[in-house]
Length: 117
Image (tube, rainbow, N blue to C red):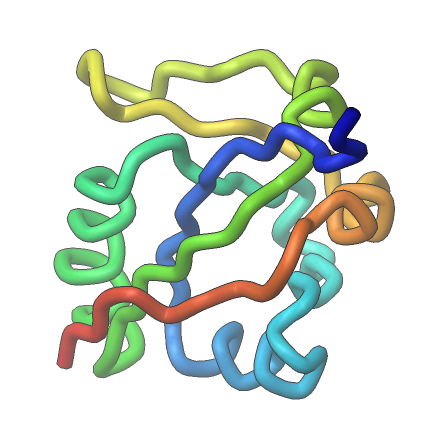
């Protein structure tokens, strides 16, 4: 029998500052939220992440990045999928105080899959 965990692929749009912090964490975790960021929200599809990185992060930070990472599926069951607009605009809302535990359930590393400038 395999002890391999089932994982779910998530994406997260990020600006250059957040990406620098992920790099400092050796691509294995997301940095703590700022006081004005009570929720960490990874998204469930690349298209939505691209839209945010390209249309929002570039405008506000000069660059936008789409990251992809795997999280233990069983653990993710505690976070209901939230629809933030249209049918494909789906995200998870992870309370900031649960981010360390969320990070502990990332399997492998966080990868940059798209860059916009």
